[in-house]
Amino acid sequence: MLDWMKKAAWFSLAILFLCLVIVFIFVPFNSMNETDMEAESPVIQKSSTKGLYMGPNYHVMMLNGDRYDVSKKEIYQLQIGDTYGTQKKSSIKTAILLGAILYPASILILWFVWGIFSGLFPESRLVQWVYKKERENKKRLKDIGGMALKIGILLFIVICTVIYLFIGKNLFYKMNPMGKEEAMAEIIDKEQERTSYGRGVTEKYTFALQYQDQTGTTYKTEKGVSSFTYQLYQNGDEIAITYRIKHPYDTFIKTSKIGEILSVLISWGSFLILTGIYINYFLIKRIIEERSLDIR
Image 1 (cartoon, helix red, strand yellow):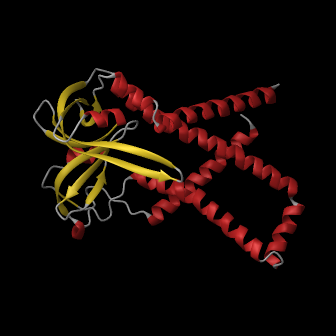
Image 2: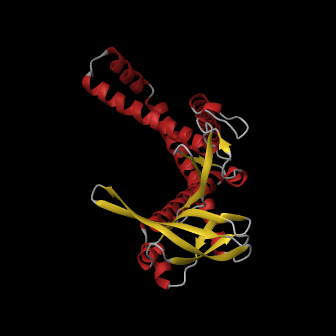
Image 3: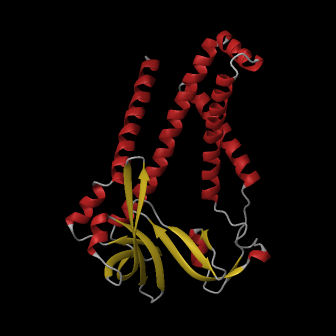
């Protein structure tokens, strides 16, 4: 293994440890057996949300009007009318995401603050001392910068790979006919959400669906759909879906028109996914080539 990859691995572990420390300090955890008695409220509705590419997320609506995220295990364990302490509820996935965001965000903030400070007070002792150390350790700083870049590339590849594994898992379940059942779902609401990014605009289309599994149990889900599918149906219409028999909250729209497939393939989400795949392929190829040169 390359020397820089060893250092990157250890440095990445240090970053992960720091993120976990931050998470465990600032994010409270509990399980279904460790509830806050003052926050308990009866569950009146269970539902899931699912986009076009990833698996579902799960939610419960409480009698007091609050809505909270729950795990896959909890969505099936909880029944309507069960009391559930929610004040300290926080999923591990959310906590890890928070820790992963806090570290680069804190570095970005420090870099921004230093840029303003050094620009306003260029003659101060602190700024002059930093500049002096920078000149004295120019080669070392260059090595650190190169190391940081390689670590960033490695982390980018790992994160993207994990995301693509989740996308691939969802695609596998959609394409695989085994272990699934067909049903007709009623569209109880439809929503078109527009988000502006400067001059660009992205649109998100969602159906609120209600359906029954083969045992007669009713489920509710908010399912992301393509723009083509969104235009085909109105509130109150029925739409053909499939769901996993062992996991009824995981639903898939049964596509029957080529326009539905093309609408997904030419969306911004698909473009970003394909772009990320190409970037990962390019970076991995470069690493392999550098590794081959080092061996020679």
